[in-house]
Structures are given as structure tokens and as C-alpha cells.
Length: 47
Image (cartoon, rainbow, N blue to C red):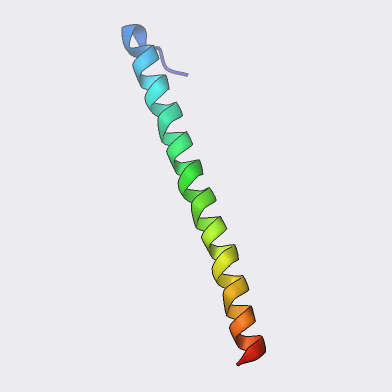
């Protein structure tokens, strides 16, 4: 890991926030995928 000097806290917190945001986006996308897939299967079953 490179020496970040006096900016270590800011850089590492920016990395942490980015990782949390990416994980949130992936989680929300996955949840939507599951709901849409279930709805599509329901329509195909009845339609």
C-alpha cells in the first residue's frame, strides 16, 4: 500500500464510501432483477 501521508484518512474513507455505494447499487439491481424475473415468470405462466 502506498504511503498516503497526511491524506490517508481522506483517501481510505473515499475508498470505503465508494465500495459501500457500489455494493448498494449491486444489491438494489439484484433485488430488482429477482422481482422482474418473478413477474415475467408469472406473466408467462398465465399468458
